[in-house]
Length: 441
Image (cartoon, rainbow, N blue to C red):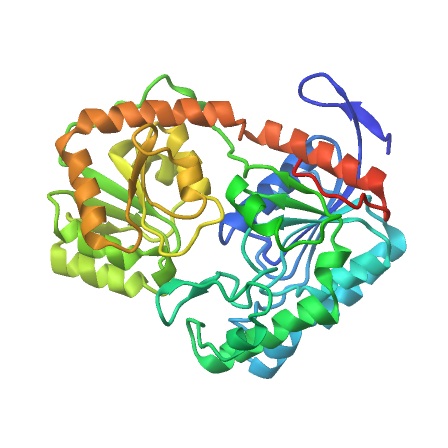
């Protein structure tokens, strides 16, 4: 393969061999969406890309992209593996994944290995296998997995943020039941985490990190090795031609809010179900998860016109729903690392109401592109929703500014791929020897 080419802006680029790793071969969440969209974008630029995953099915988007190879091990993730002993062991060390990586490297050696999510199936032990083959590794910080055993810096039992990820809190972390399932599961997570940190030392073996927000970069730079560069690269948004209109004309009807995402306690969906009772408005819920039945029960109790539960929907339907609603609500209890849906809403001139913590307030400026409410406070959320109901012109103004902000952030897929290419080349040139003092780049 010719190792040079032309990018979308007519510039010469070096063609790279890139290995992209993600637990799932389909979009099951934000990290998976970024992994798949960016891998396709790299392949479309002419790079030689291999997509490596554990859990099927392989989505249509991957199958239609010009990859050098797609590898799916067709395994179960930890949660859905019926053999719990096997799940416990493979969650720490997935022998088959490591065997297949070594087999791949016998015939093909990448310039860069880019890891998105390996905590639910592939296992972090795969980092050691790649490192031992002297392939530079880049890791995207989609969550808090390198800081916290339950990957959320959140105590699910106490329903509060947690700071036991700090240095010197290891034993206190172990004896604290913070897991959403049970304490036995917490102990397993703690053992896995300490194997990750002290057994295989993954932080030392990763050559560079991608932070999905300034919030995440600032948090992690205090805990990662000082010679490992961190690059802030926002999650990409693929814009369709229909999203390029001047302004969305929303129908004149009863005010409707939108929730889009995983239906789980840390996402605060129960707060929203309570808040919607207190206001004269409707709610559309798009998503799936452990609280789906609770959402359906609320819909039955309040009426399907008041609360409409649609489950997961495709991109086209989501875009249509965004054009029907006055605002997107993100009521998260924990600190989100970033939020793709905020930017998807901004493309549709839809403002957001968000909890005032984590990266949410980085992407939604209060009174400028959306509104904040006090996190984990139903009354504050209901009052903020009421403000939009009473002043619909405010929603229109915030939506216009949200779209302008999105355009200024450069979060389109082409800009995202260009930034990835630049970081890949920087890490490739650094090789094994990295500078002693890290700079946020």
